[in-house]
Length: 259
Ligand code: SER
Image 1 (cartoon, rainbow, N blue to C red):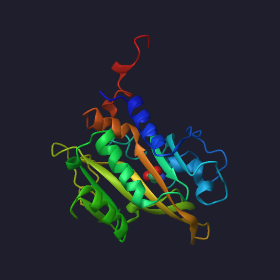
Image 2 (image 1 turned 30 degrees about the horizontal axis):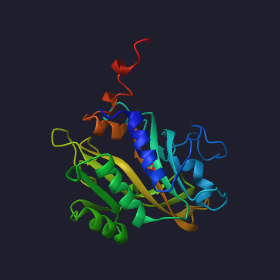
Image 3 (image 1 turned 180 degrees about the vertical axis):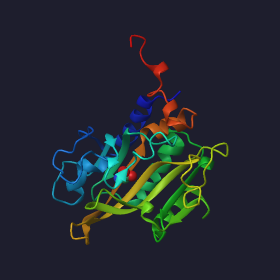
């Protein structure tokens, strides 16, 4: 069985090999950001790096970020306990480019890691792109050979990621795993998309804008990448389960005997 610890390590080491700095998770409560109560994704600690206000010694980073989505724009609380995939606390694995690489590298990285290092069967995968993102759709087509039925164009804000009412944002491309027809649910964009059959395992955001408090958007200094893979969801897939509460991290039976 592939443990949560092995998945986290495989992800971080894959991106280290691609020239990314492994950066520690930031604390759950953001240090210098009055717009958020809790970190809701891996990009939060890098908000000012995307906007150009802060410089780091690296332009590529990878993290395993502690997250809570319990309010604001990304609130999962209503779903916890009702679906097989939502948690109050979770870890998000991410790779980030601060004005370094963009879509034509981010998409092949994601595909290689999923299908080679993690060994997922491409037949069980499908992807979404923002409806007018012909460039991302063309890259996916080239590297996967998928037809239009598996590169699904979504015209809603489901495929335009924003950290909150303000902050970095951009169109995104989500990767879904199909748990099979024993589980109720339909592909993204279909009337049954909210079921647990097709589960989003990874979101690749093509960061290009910053939303400002007056509701307008400006361009970021350079196009950038922000991705987020649900660690516990990947564990669900790789451990052959469909219910996130069945993974090694959350089963009482996997706790040390002394507990
Ligand atoms: N910020 C994006 C998300 O949370 C990708 O990390 O989905």
